[in-house]
Length: 150
Ligand code: ZN
Image (tube, rainbow, N blue to C red):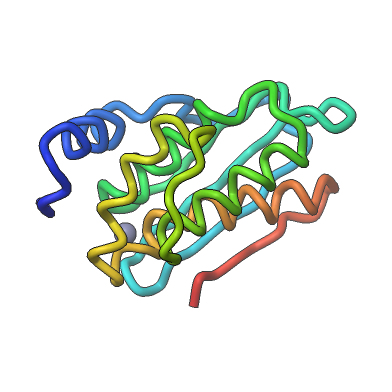
């Protein structure tokens, strides 16, 4: 495993082994699929949107520990958020992993991924779920959106 610091590593390992909100969702009204060809991570994100609020969120797929843990922690942080808040979190998470910026406090546990910045190959693993979420938010229709990080 990568040297992300013990605490970080523990949280990421825990979520990769026991992903939260994992499995198909009957009530979903927005879905998107994401693929990270660099690593082979595949994910489907499902949402139940009520007006502008994310009432339920779940994911399925298979990928490395980082991509699974990121998706799991993402779903935990999204319930009850509006589209706008979700977009804001996406930006914060993206900045955390790609930029020089400090993690905004509202990222909470998601800040554990700051260590991934040291491993550029893994950044796309960590952001895949978020790109897929974004596609789902912009696509609450019957046609499934597909994103690739390539
Ligand atoms: Zn990966």
